[in-house]
Image (cartoon, rainbow, N blue to C red):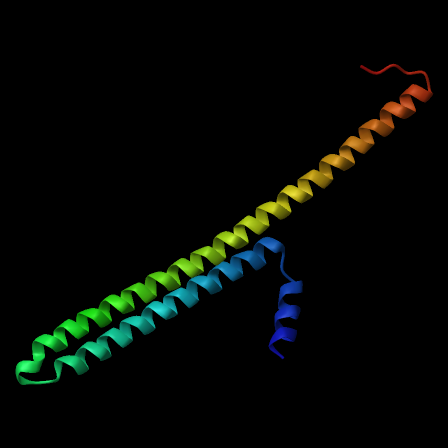
Length: 126
């Protein structure tokens, strides 16, 4: 069902609109991952700080480690999203270059056809 919905929606969009939606989707996934990481950090640090007595200092170190790991996870997620966006941009540029090359080939063929027709009719073109 999801692929059917995705296909129906994507056929009504231009390539640039679809790319913009994919970028927005990646950005939203990144924001969701960052929020989940922040929630996990806040829950994790409060549970570690809840231990009383002499265990507070090791718990604080653990909380700092958890915070560092969560921060690194958020950075990795951010980098993965950025990589996906850059790959998509690269593919879009490659498609644009291909389309431009095809247009140039068509114009070259038209120019050659005009020169051939002119030559057959005795018209000299520069």
